[in-house]
Length: 322
Image 1 (cartoon, helix red, strand yellow):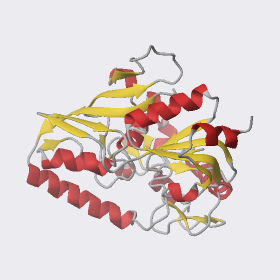
Image 2 (cartoon, rainbow, N blue to C red):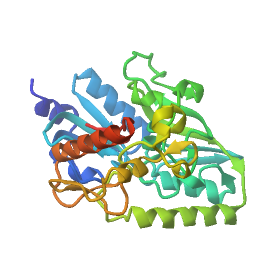
Image 3 (cartoon, rainbow, N blue to C red):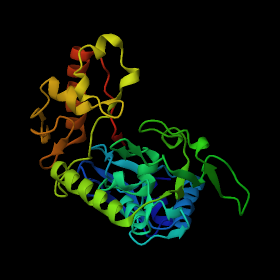
């Protein structure tokens, strides 16, 4: 049986042959055989379990800020877990939140309740769940720093009725720089709990506001981009030979900025089709119109080659290709 009739039969609310470019901040991508947006943890794991049971291929996306879809048709169901009205529960210094909510909702909920530890994440687009999967961070702070546990659904196991979900502690999440167990296993992030520190509301809001203003200068909301395209490099993982070629003043928070490496090889302004590197930031790749995934990959490959030839450092994409 073909995929579209299956999706139509089991997911009557799904949109068929749906364009995917407008589901991302980059504006790149073809179409999906089916597209379904869900808002609650129950709706998400319910959709995933049904798709799995009916053997319908599926992909889960969050806010779409770190995703590059293929130019081809995705022969399956794209499930977007995003909601602006999800649950936020605060008790003492603990914040528990639906992973579907925008990350800024989490930051604001913490700051207005005098809770510190997340303010450096201000202005980062996407959802809480997406940020957790990629262990998003900025200014030396990562979302995992104050994370306590995560409610997940594991589609690869047949759990007993009533036990479809479970809480993973932080250690089980295997967080690393821009990485987590969720990039390597099919765990579905539903809710997240944080344990934060006491802070001063006015100071936290001031810092948050300053960070947002700074980010908006680099990433205006109208800009079609996925944010930083390549991961920064952990300085401790760079060879001594390569480190000699790097300006030590550029190393911040123990990382070599990918933007610095790219600018050193003349990346600014490089172009492939409708996709180009900003003329003011080497790690900012922009879609000037109807850009193609194929062009993104071509440009990325050229940039990686240039950096490797000069520094013998292999850049790794922060974005996820689907």
